[in-house]
Structures are given as structure tokens and as C-alpha cells.
Length: 165
Image (cartoon, rainbow, N blue to C red; front, side):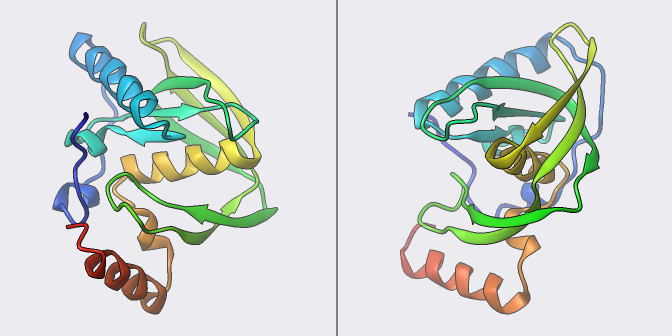
């Protein structure tokens, strides 16, 4: 079973710097994809495995019951729609906690593939939410950072009370 970094590890607050895709990054991407499949996560960022690297795995499946994983190296969101919606979000690094987060309904992002070829990707709905969550995480923004102080403190109390640390 994959060991995931647990909140509140300070690495969650560190932003990964874009860099050329190399074999170490490719290996980490495959490891991250396997970890996501193992726990049926909709997405993961490298920091979940303890590595502050500019890569995420995101399922772009429109059906939330299935997975269609993509490894995105050096992803960057270029556009986020003004239309937004709230939805429940959680993290393998903070099990037992789900909170409602406001996100754009549609995004456009660019990313590198394993051969450093740049691609554009448009996502909407749940897949857009997952990508925003993971790119935030890669950029040092934990999902709780998107909450008011009161709601964040309530989520942390719930996590601590469950003894998940």
C-alpha cells in the first residue's frame, strides 16, 4: 500500500518550480499514476508522495465512477471560466475530511507530456475541479487554504478528532 504524506506536512505549502521533463520525473509520474489507481483517486499531486515536483495525475473521465488518468508535467491553468460551482473535495493526505470548495466550471490548461511536448487541454465539470485541485496542490495551495478561517479550523478539528494524524 502506498504511503501518502499527511497533513500538515510543511511540503504542502511549497510550490513546485517548472523544469524540463527527465527520466526521474517520468518515473515519479508513473509512480503517481499507479498510486492514484491503487486508491481510485481522481487525481494526485507529486507532493502526496513527498516530492515537490511540477507534476500531477488527473482523471479526465466525465463519469466520476471511472478513471482516465493523464500525467501532466509542468501544468499551468491559462483560463478559468467565470461560471463557478461548489463541490465536495478531500485529500488522501487528510482522510475523513471533505469540504465544499468553489471552483471554475471550465478551464484550459497547458502541460508537457513525457517527451516534453507541450499540449493544451480543455476540461469542464468534475474533471476541471480535479485538475484545479491538483494544480493548486502542486503550487503549494492545500484545498483547506480555499476556505474561510472558521471552516478551515472546523475541518482541521474534525481531522484531529478522528485521530487520522
